[in-house]
Image (cartoon, rainbow, N blue to C red; front, side, top):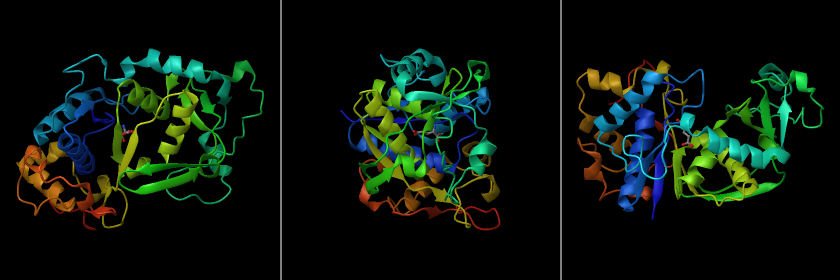
Amino acid sequence: MYVTRLAPSPTGALHLGNARTFLLAWLRARAAGGRVILRVEDLDHPKVKPAAVAEIYADLRWLGLDWDEGDDCPTGNAPYAQSKRLPLYREALTKLRGDLYPCVCSRADIENAQLAPHAGEELFYPNTCRDKKIPPAQINDKTAWRFIAPAGEREFIDNFRGRERADLQQFSGDFVVARGATPAYQLACVVDDAAMGVTEVIRGDDLALSTFRQLALYDALNLSPPQFLHLPLLVGADGRRLAKRHGDTRLATLRQAGISPQKVVGYLARISGLSAGQPATPAALIAGFDLAKIPRGAVTVADANGGFFL
Ligand code: GLU
């Protein structure tokens, strides 16, 4: 049985870029006759905004997406908010204990330690603290715990991008799996995708490199990984990931402006190669869904003046 998940972070309102990834993930699952899980990734304090959870539910429903499992329709996999799943992550951290060490480097330390300018947002960590004996008095509830990443190339087949190869020790170094007692995204994501029986992870390609971190954790925890599918992002005229500077593409704003969800879905379907752009419900697009039609590169959806092309 095909199972995927929508995994929004309630750090702000959903915008057109999130909507497009979720629509395509939902279509892929529905076209396969599979299940959709709604998981709320709310571990990233203090950025998490409690009110955002209700807004995300409202935005997804407004678009016409539904799900088979979530906190509003729980099954055996409940709960679905990561903040309620801490014991599972702690258990995994205990299993990884022999491969973890505390790191007392500040972000500035790590920035200063860059060997070469790194593209994008990936910061290389030169394993500075791996062999240090950090005195227990220096370890507190903010201390980062790093996982000793395996060296050597690893490969996976991305169901959209094809063969991906990378060596964690070349682009990342040892990576953070917890801060104090709070698990980090990489760990929580692996534990949940495995526990929830996800068969294919669909997300934006800003997370494609993170897949190598997650695969290392699947191996270390003796879990079998799902398949992965990374979609190109929506970008502004400057080629950068859709953000506030490109205009207000929040779904709540579009809704308040009186734009219909069918118009938004039709637009997202057009830029995804799935229709000519006529207003549509997600359900009406299931029959015509075809991964091969989705453009391979980033899609520009905003002009240089803060206007977007809806
Ligand atoms: N919560 C992440 C986000 O909103 C998605 C993580 C994932 O799909 O693995 O960007």
